[in-house]
Image (tube, rainbow, N blue to C red; front, side, top):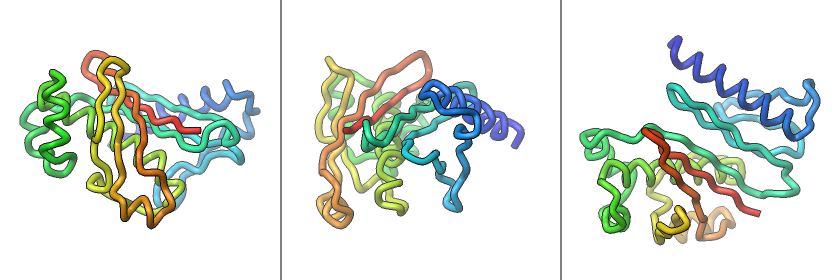
Length: 184
C-alpha cells in the first residue's frame, strides 16, 4: 500500500512538472480522478500518465495540437510471467512477429503489453468504456524505427468511429519498456 502511494505521488509530481512546462499556472495544474479512476485533465489539455515501482512519466499537450496521447512504461516481464500472461496479451501471430525480429518471448510480450496499454490510455477518453487487449493486434513491426502498428478489430473501430491503425513508438531502457502513441 505504501509503495503504491509513493508511485502515485511520484506520478502527480511529474504531472505538475509537465503542466508547468506547458505554461499552466499552479491553479491550473490540478488533475483530479474520475469515478472510473481515469485522470481528469485541465480544460483543453490531454495527457497520459504511467508509473512503475521506480519510474514515473507524464505526457501532456494542448488538445488543439494532438488528438490522442497514450504513454506507458512497464518492467520487462520475467519469462514465466510472460508465458502465464501471454493469452491475455497477444495471440501467437503477434508474438511470432516479435520473436522473428529477435526479441525473446518475455521482451516481445512486454512490448506488446505496453503498446496495448498506451493504446488503451489514448482511446479510453474517446470511447469512455473498458475494452480488452483482444480488441487490438500487432499488425506491423518496424524495427529500424522502433515502432509497431496496432490494428483494432473492425467491429470495435466501427462501433466507436475510430481509425483502424495506430502507430506506437517503443524503446527498451534497462529493465523497462516505454511506449508512446501520439496522433494528430
